[in-house]
Image 1 (tube, rainbow, N blue to C red):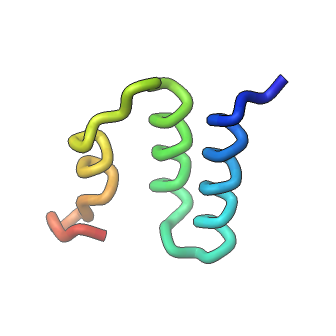
Image 2 (cartoon, helix red, strand yellow):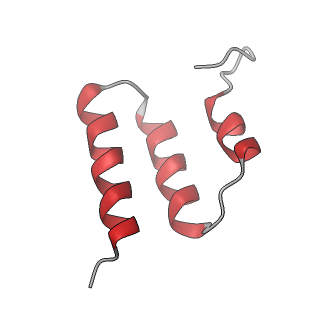
Length: 57
């Protein structure tokens, strides 16, 4: 059975993909991070959203 957290994460990521607000690589990285870490840190998100040129996406 799917947990409430898993349901929310999947809906959130599906919405991001549908809106095309992030590229697929960042969405997959987010999916992996949220699935593997029960306690996600701010630094984890910063690593994902910092662009190749050190700009926040």
